[in-house]
Length: 478
Ligand code: NAD
Image (cartoon, rainbow, N blue to C red; front, side):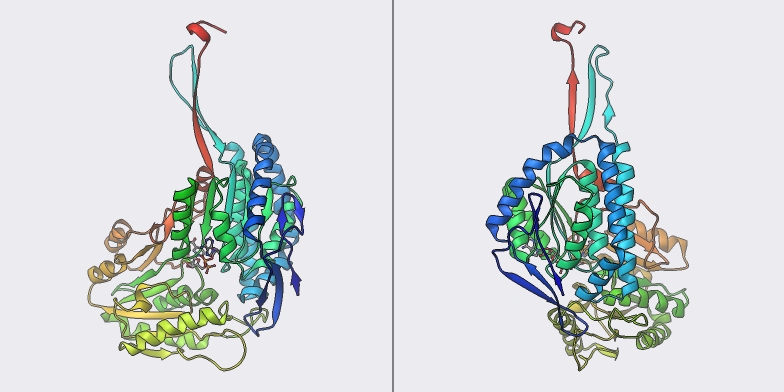
């Protein structure tokens, strides 16, 4: 059992008068974590203490900050196995995936440690006797509010970029993965000056209290769209900059000319990895009628062949969902689609037994207007809509309240070109559901958020640029 402590004003074990929350292992329902809940008053005090540490960290030479961040990355690496085990115990993903998430987080910390010191401003061509330049500065106090689905990788991105630029950070990890957040904060804090990083635990009320603080300069939220919208409203009141990486309903288009077996392999990966709990999971499939029957047969076979079990079992390919409440949400969308005429080909039934398991599910005869297709499901479900043309597929793919990412499987270069030009999303992938070069970064559209949530551009998001003009008094020399 993990016993989490908060970190406020450089002091471990501070606060917690808001009570305690208990996290249960989604594989068997047993309690795994006890975490304190911060009160609104504690949140305010923690922000104020962080503000006191901001000037010192901002004035620390960039190379020294980078060296501290490298040491912090070493500490996270040393705690990698503990972090992976805590992730699996709290949110259920297969242990190897959890290890991958930690490794990605360590890599991101190191990238930001390398990039931040070499990211300069601009000099300007003004009067030769004057000096004109633009200098990026840290914004000050950053609140990072993060989700549970890949807790270390996501948190390291926001925390690494914000800290490397010279901001102080208050981290509020998800109430479903507080021990993972606590282990990460312990590792990072061991290499940082006291007060530069704070850890606040609790649920949505703690996040809301943090987002409402006047002294917070940036609120960076990764999580659900509805949460992002309420944080944006809070930011409008306080004047904080708001950075949002939110939900999605990513389409997969299967063109008429692709091998349906290979397309099914891609679809299975996109729909079922991490039990569908990935922001860029495939959430809806538009398959051309010419290949639909073979594609569906192959996808059903792949879904049925996955090994289901607890994340800690090395044979497991499909772990449980994060909790039963989320399972009800997933199953509710499937049941509503069936009630509206769709047909479950495999899965789609709540299993008996402990935990929050949900089978890999393929639903055919879906229509574009069904909630299962239009809204985010965040579960191991593949809703399949048959279309009669690439035009129709692209039109449906573009018609969404979200705009995170999209994948198109096609043998046609002109269809690939149309896809990346016409789809109103942050990321377009052609012929691979997951892929992309290091350093790539995108801005999500519509309900999927705003601003860059990763890549070198995230360093800019956490900086404020100042324009400076220096000239001698009276226009002479000095
Ligand atoms: P969530 O928004 O419910 O929770 C995320 C964090 O926000 C938690 O720490 C939570 O306590 C906090 N929070 C909740 N309500 C709040 C409020 N009113 N004010 C301030 N903070 C609040 O999201 P979740 O369920 O933890 O995560 C799943 C969602 O995250 C999915 O929609 C998924 O698509 C999204 N996600 C997006 C990305 C991306 O890069 N776009 C990455 C990972 C996850």
